[in-house]
Image 1 (tube, one colour):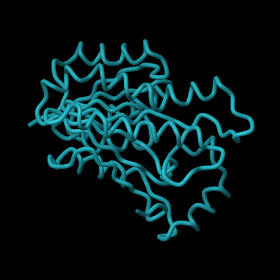
Image 2: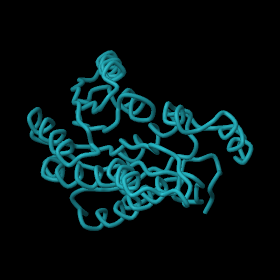
Image 3: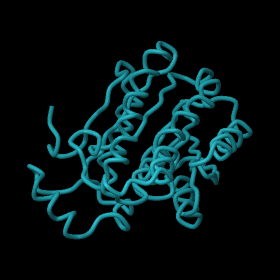
Image 4: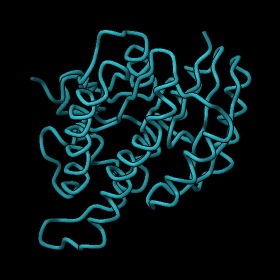
Length: 243
């Protein structure tokens, strides 16, 4: 059965790869903010892979942007089967001695508040879906501490806690899970991580390598298809963090 799937932050990286992997036979809402040309390429790829694409532009770091996104989705469909809260970013590295209130607000708005509000607004659509589920993208940064990225890690830890809370609140109608990526080679790192940092993290990894977007997209697909997983966070990091 064809699914209606909303993926936030789907113009590049994990979001883009997830859209392409889930395309066949499904309707994919490709959300983007500033990367319009990249989003158009993803939408074209969805069509080539046998799916239907819908492009939606919105600034999810604002309340109005979140409302505009879900309003646009609701204008195209009366139900939603899958919500992937992928949009997010580190924005800027900053040591604890230099914390700025505005930066803390920006990071939490982008990584936490947006996912919380988009989820809330999508619940009526998801309740009409078939075996509906929500998947939140968190991060290994919430697991082991990430110097100069601790605000980002804290925002993802809050989203992880939110995942478990709404997994109980929305069950049994809607399943909610999360994926916590490790170091994944995507444009995410272009402006916030140096080649030297990436190499040092690779050496710390038992597998001596970084992941790619496909590793995460495959896990998202697994969570969509397995209807007995709820309230879980799956760590995909090569062993960088182990429980």
